[in-house]
Image 1: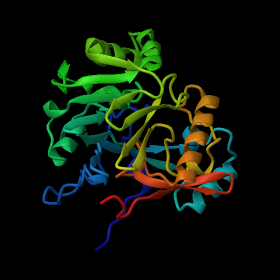
Image 2: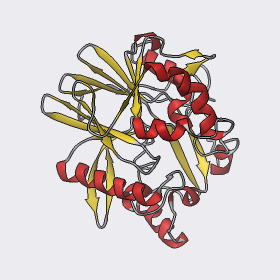
Image 3: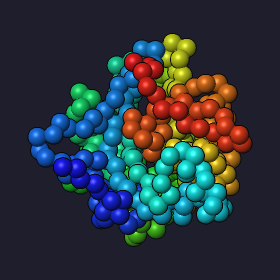
Image 4: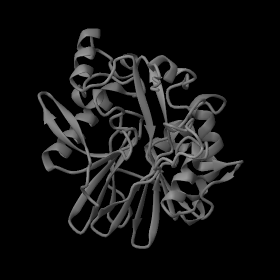
Length: 310
């Protein structure tokens, strides 16, 4: 006997807000308990660095054109989607912090939504939260800072913290009674005394350098990893979808706070990745979130990893 799951049924109960997870689930969590657990961690090698994407969670969302297709006609959005074998009426969101092991340090980039997924992913990577030495926050949207606290206490009890000065200055002045500003006040402000605030080009750990990619948020940062002549870029939320944000980087994304700056950052970095043939890990790319970028017409194409960097 065969069964099928309609797209609408799959979407039922999905989160109503852009980057929160009222109904966050990993694909397949409703399967029988005897089913093997889905992977939440994937290890890559970059020289002598360990680079480990960590799947905090995943959830579907309806009406992706309203999110990723700002400025696109319905017909063009449908054509780009069809060319890449994806539907126009739903998108699957992924939330993927990254752990980097370098020179005996464990450096965690972003912390997920705060529903326990990061601890489970770290466990699959053979690490516990108290073993994290440094937490780097690329920007302060809720899906990146949600895991900083657990039951009112720091999740990463022994860690230092790094974030961009422009980013922190913006959010520290935000309304602390609602939205992202409230979560910053709850999760970030109590850790400020343990934080270092950096500018473009700062080195946060050996071989890890900040790249200003402002626009998605006022102080959004990406990071270049380099070890033994090999390089990789953690792009964070530079591009929020592996098809639409690459094929049409000028389409406006609803999550981008300064859309013109976000578009300029997206084009600049994607062009660099394609020209220099560098791998990337993107926070919202399909897990394990790693791939390469090639030019395609006036846009780009995300090419997922297979057995590279093993």
